[in-house]
Image 1 (cartoon, helix red, strand yellow):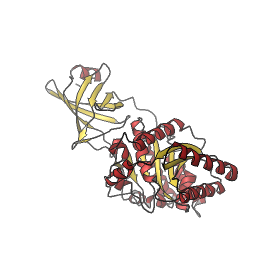
Image 2: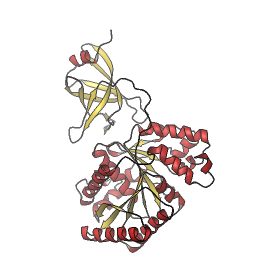
Image 3: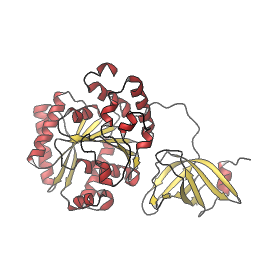
Image 4: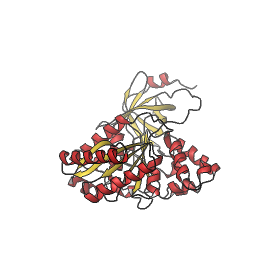
Length: 379
């Protein structure tokens, strides 16, 4: 006789070992945990471990729990409805909601991060901004879209045998390609695969969009680490994204190249939001001066508004974290730069608004597809 969820709760006790399976190709399992607290309507368990590594299952994940209790093996369906951090990390499990009709595509914002020149800390910002957003309770997916030197995997010391090119060729499903980074960050290795997606025939392109829709169920925001410079492989991503973050440093060449990138976007009638981050500054006064000059020039001469997201001071902890292949937010979370990145994440999370145009990966790739010469008729 099948027991109800309430009956199962009545025979469970704190300290009992449980096994979790998700059925997800992102979080494969099985994972092992223990019951911390039995509540009237749910179950609080310790954050699960896998080979000694903490597994940060996202809120909303459907979980099958198996436990030995009262001389029998019980297996029941639950859903993660809450996740707490800190030293006593835990998950709150409750009964899954009843099945619903097919949901419309989610409006997941796609934020492209770029720069006018390389070497200004773009990838560092993307990775650590993603981790900071995760710590705010958001589910974050980072797509490595730098077609020249994709290196997010190196920065966070994870490896993946596949990327989006394998997905575009039909060799792998997208959810088999993603890897889990620190703090539950989801990383999708892109490489040349992002460009290949836009050249697929209509049927295969539609199939790819369906896979991205599956991915969006695991994300509240998607960050794309684009290349740097003024090439179409960079500007097209910025034109197609829901909004963009441009990063510069105080060096004159970096400022000039960043302004040139804004100019190119303005001539292409870029309609998305543009945000500015000034990295490696000597202090708030220098950052404020650079931001003021860039926003003034952009408004006066390009008729393009820049939203200043903030700045990051020069901090030796950043270089040390890169050498250790450990994100700054993990390596030195109380460092000056890490605290400033956390502040940027709070501002970005608070400023993400309901977009006027179609959002999510569906809208992003349809717009990107229209920007590729010769493919306008396929959009």
